[in-house]
Image 1 (cartoon, helix red, strand yellow):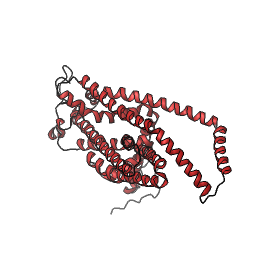
Image 2 (cartoon, one colour):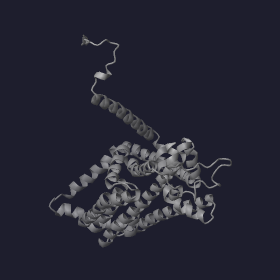
Image 3 (spheres, rainbow, N blue to C red):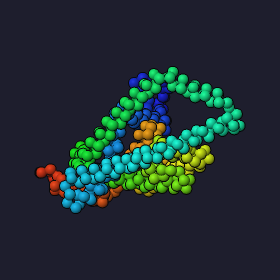
Image 4 (cartoon, one colour):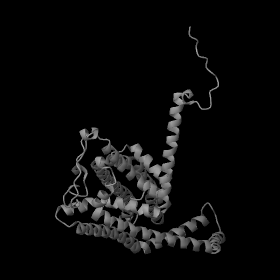
Length: 399
């Protein structure tokens, strides 16, 4: 006759109690601490990027510019141009086009400034007459007192205005430094981008090196598509607002449309600034009602861009869902401001294309996505004595 063992309700201190914890609670705890670690790591990365923003932002902009100019460099290389010469030609041509557009805008504004100043004086006179003879029934002394108060405020806050001007001058210096750094990085990306990427890929284990190489090239190809789609959106913005200004007979239509085109490459703030300039000129030349109509046109075009063009064109170009594009822009704006909004969708596009390529069952063809060189494995690109890695097949992965 066997006697059942009597269990002690109090467990010894040395006995493992893991088995007494419900399985669901153990899984939840494991997921929770791993999630906390991932969030902490992401926070550390974001903090490091913000701390090194002076370098990271020019690097990101250089990547975008390289994605825009790399196809042109590749076409020149295909017709037997040396890569260094092709880079110089494309870069100088791009800078010439940008400088020409900016010069055209500044020249047109300068030539139209006397007329705008005359119309501004007339508009101010009309506003003064309306304040005196209109519903407000203000006296001349009240208007003069208001003007005196404005000048008094400027005099009393002269120190603050001076500090603000110095800060603005420092910001201009940082912008110039960032531009030069961006230009310097872009030159190296266009002239030796493939070599830089090959050097980085050497840090990947040899068994998956070719697959990672192709994934990175597909990511860059997706970045090229993103830049082209952004340019298309900028053209639509410029045409839409330009046609609206032409219908309203606002002067300086072409330079304003050009300004809108350039500003469309800067998310949020570019559209606000360029649209604000158009509204102010309409206010001076067409009056309050005309300015309201131009404001409605600008807001309509911006809404079309934000809710239709960017989600559809960018989503189709980088193979992202429109909702993902909208959320990426919003999240980037919250986390990193204008720079975050500028970089959010390109980063998401590169990650999406790269991860899709890595998870593909069969290894893709590098020639399908190579936009930097004719072939990544050309003998001229490889170092002497360096064997070319073969693209792994599914059977190799299983081994």
